[in-house]
Picture (cartoon, helix red, strand yellow):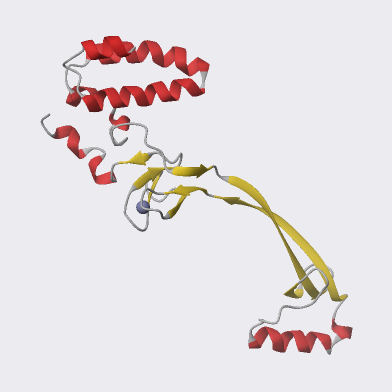
Length: 195
Ligand SMILES: [Zn+2]
């Protein structure tokens, strides 16, 4: 592979990096390997300038010259959240619920209005079918993938702008797989530049 690349003097370095990016993708999936393999060989041989190459594969333009990944990449994952509530209601969640621990101890940081309601509930047992009962609730949340930016900042990868997001500290852009990207303003416009 290397041999024939080095023999193509007219293909510049960035172009080769993007070719390597495609190679990287191939390794993940054998079917894709075979499919892309044919395409890329043909592609590289066909294009005589970077401009031409990007015009045919504009989506590769944003990969900042290759395959640079965020560090310590952690994929997105699902997580179960469990919370407990002290419930005063009609048995069908019409009423009051106050966050508490699993033993039913209502958290100390209730805001004044909630505290007022809680005390009112405690003093009006006849108003409720379910009175002062600890109810466990659980649900699933999806945590964004994340990793450590080159600047040291922990970056959560979410769809901030067309499938990409930016490090809040240094401004580096990433896609949701944690690959470094050029800033969005460079994704397309440079296609028109002369190389
Ligand atoms: Zn950063």
